[in-house]
Length: 288
Image (cartoon, rainbow, N blue to C red; front, side):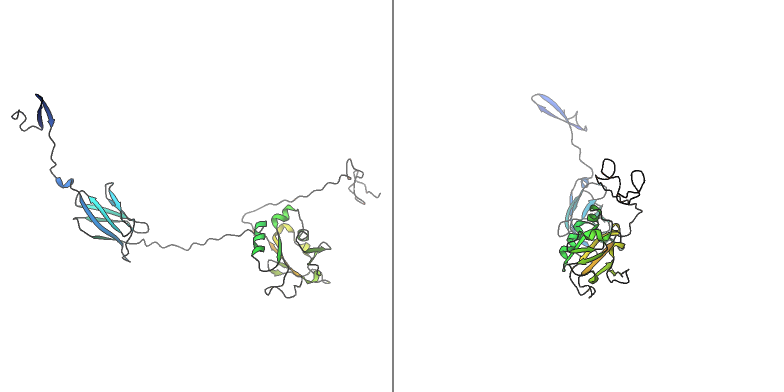
């Protein structure tokens, strides 16, 4: 049997008078391919010499690799020499380094990315036309003030500024255009439009007629009821600050409609129009 299997890639085993033929294990001609060698090193910043943690270290062309620890140290098993290591880290340039022999305490430096960032400006516009914004401003104010927002103005269907001011606490409207604060005369009330003082359109009165500004153009109306150093000294009663809406970013169209109902006027009512109106049921003037 030995003569038969001499020089053959087979062997045999005799068990219980049976001959079992098996293939012989081949021995690799290059044992260095299966010999694992351990590479130990450390990764640092090329400029500051500071150690880098969690650096990705991979063997090029294979799936093997590791990451550096919190002190920048790493240990990697490699199967052949020479080999190429690929190191990558966020904010640093990817580096390839060729390993020709296994060294202890190998130090590898990575260079930061020289990326020039341009200035970034973030702009935002604060909403001041809601009840939440008005209440927040009043809560943070160091003086006594009250306000009404555009949200509430639209909800109450106010057409003029004076109609909206009738819903502000402590404000009295006279002649449908003049405003008195805290019961004092209207001559001691100052009107401002976006921080600029308004002049009276009546040469005989110093009071400001506030019915000239449509309520639909306003973000909010703020009434300051106390005197402060940054406000005019002649505002004994208070200051009515009108803050207009900002310029819209795109073309807008706004339509406001109002209507009313009187059960005594028109069809089914006792009258077909108002006194001296030319809009009677038949287009005639109603005198009685």
